[in-house]
Structure formats: structure tokens, C-alpha cells
Length: 88
Image 1 (cartoon, rainbow, N blue to C red):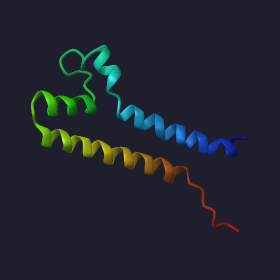
Image 2 (image 1 turned 180 degrees about the vertical axis):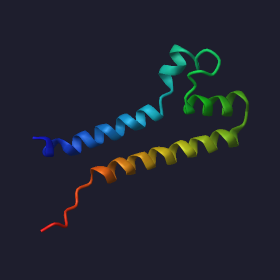
Image 3 (image 1 turned 90 degrees about the horizontal axis):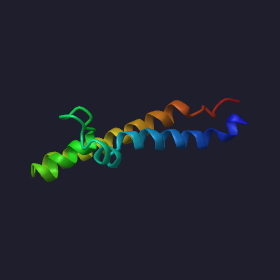
Image 4 (image 1 turned 60 degrees about the horizontal axis):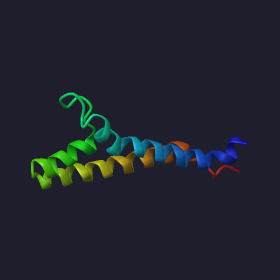
């Protein structure tokens, strides 16, 4: 049963990790970055840099970095879970 559900578990793991990296709305709604900058995730820092401090280049660099990190994490999870099908 587990080998048949492995693709679903793999996609759920990737979506969950990427969702954790890209959390924004719940942090803004609950703490707005916390006391000081204690709970400021990368996405909120990107938003504040771009639109509060008008540093659009820095904010877009953070967005690109976040995209690359999400891609690398997804590829790492995929590579770890991939099975070798070349065995006879």
C-alpha cells in the first residue's frame, strides 16, 4: 500500500515544505513580524524591503533567492525519493 501512495506523499511533502518557506499571510495577520523582527520570515522581509523602504531591487533579489531555494528543496526531495529503475 505504501509504494502505491508514494507519489502522493512525495507531492504532499514538497507542497508542505514550499508552503512553509513561503508563509506570509498568517504572519502578517497574527504578529506583523513579531515583537521587533523576531518572527519575520523571508517573504515578509521581502515585502517590507520592497514596499516600505522602496528598495525594489533588493526585494526582487530576495524573491529570486526564495524561488531558487524552493526549487532546490523540491529537487532534493525528488532525488532522495527517486528509485533506481535500472536494476534487472
